[in-house]
Length: 118
Length: 208
Image 1 (cartoon, rainbow over the protein chains, first blue to last red):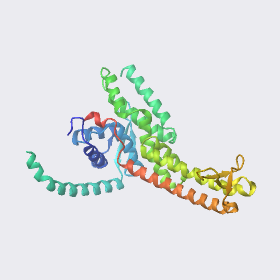
Image 2: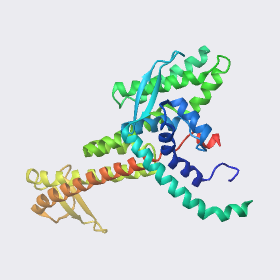
Image 3: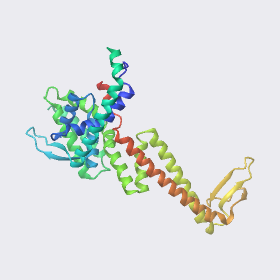
Image 4: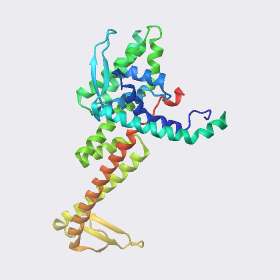
């Protein structure tokens, strides 16, 4: 990585994976925006910010992949929870399937390079 | 939360609401409420609130930037679905504010519609203004052409199409109108696709 920051390829790769990461984070439970951000931060290398995630959630909702509901929290401010719709579950499963095949093959291809680095 | 942080949040949300006016009031309010809830929860303890809120506001980007991330995609989708050239043109206007490719699409659209209207007008106006509407070969040394719509006096030179300007003007005008509308809708589809990979992320470069 260059000292100025990640190169363009890394940025593009992260952006391309963001939709899958969000759908995957909602696979088992409903979450609200801040929780999604925290999960992505903790469990992925995606480095996303609020300015990206909220418009993306809104787009996924308008495409019928997510649905949302407002829930009053004890903290005093209501939270907007997102969950996968049936179409969203299908899409997430398709993407995960493709991702597994793709990354497995690519892993095999780059395996020799990794040995060199060590 | 400190008063200062609270005021920062309120002011940001007010500007965001104003920037979202192209959406329905319900859609806009839903977004404002969600961003507001996020900001209040991120503020955390009263001591750190000002700093935390400032950090989140920076990652959100300016209210107008954030609003256009919310609205451009849905506008492009609406234009695409309805097939309306007018909605497509309005979407391209917005796109032009976001990227160089948008500016290119806007210039081509405006030129296309402008030329189409000139041809149509020439075809329609000829019968009412026989001597001053038409295509002239000018008598200047460069031998350039000039399309006149009847405003001002007829130019120096030779009118070259005569009554043919009526069918030609109408035909070319309609064809160009159709082509430009098609171009607009294709541009909107392209814009929608580029937005499916999330647009540039203000916080991203700084975080890493």
